[in-house]
Amino acid sequence: SMGSRFSVNRVLRVIRVVKVVRIIRVLKFFRELRMMVYSIMNSLISLLWVSLVLGLLFYIFGITFTAAATSTLDSTEKWQDPENGELVEYFGTLGRSFVSLYMSMSGGNDWAVYYFALDKTGPVYQLLFLAFVSFSIFAVVNIVTGVFVDSALTASQWDKSMIVQMEMDAKKKQLESLREVFEELDEDGNGLFDEDSFRAKLSNERVMAYFARLKLDVSDAGALFKLLDFDQSNEVSMDEFVSGIFRLQGEATNLDTKLMQYEVKYMKQAVSEIRELIREGVAISNEKAKAAAAKRSSRTGLTDAFGPVYTDPAPRGSVLPLSRASFFNL
Image 1 (cartoon, rainbow, N blue to C red):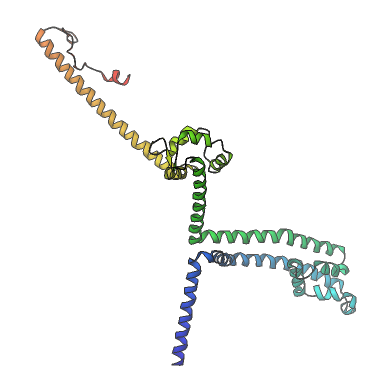
Image 2 (cartoon, rainbow, N blue to C red):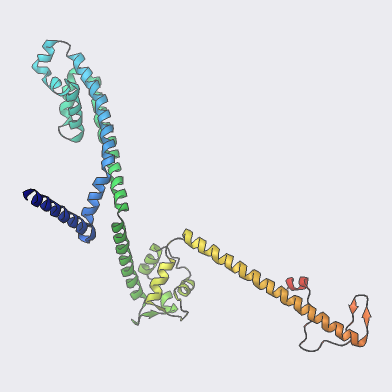
């Protein structure tokens, strides 16, 4: 019974933890915390590769300084000499050299301590140690920082809820800015503005700066006003202004290009169908005109080598023959 109670309590604790995690994912207050957790989890692979690179760097320089220390301390008396104590303590073995290099790069100890400890090995190794410090601090650390920042940004981009929230926040801010611009254009406060007030307000630097930020050309105010005036009432309301700005802002996307291609294709098919209808109508009109001419010529009996001859003018309202070439030359 005690074991069953313990297992039930454990399950209840797990359920509570899951509920807390769901609350953290849903609530907007924990958005930064959620981004930090995702960033840390996404940076684990980068941390593994960085550790491998740093370990290889410490290993190469550690072997070099350890070999220099052992070649300098070539006797038992030198190893036991108190004057060489710092060299033995910091670079006596490969493990000590590894730790000393890590501390000098990460700030665990002042790198000057290790620099003066290598004084017994000669100036060449001291310069090599300075090269190690410069390379590790100014090159490796900056590159590692950039890798972790990129991993954090990538992690935040994969969070769907965060992306939706950011888009909603950006749209809310843009709507507030549009409302402020519309209030600038609406002088009377009746919720509408006409073309004259729109042209007058475009001289305002604030309004021009906002349209420039939206990448909208305001050099032709009349054309822009017509695009915003969707119902052609010569007045633009708040809804028309907001929807028109959202339609016009930004660059053309691939979807816009495909829609334009579809519309052009549809118009081409419609023009072809109209063309065929006109051709059929012209052919029928020519046949009727020829039949009427033949009927009139049969009454008079006048013909020539090319067909019947008109002896009286065509009655008003009749259709004269029209050739296909003459139709397309119009």
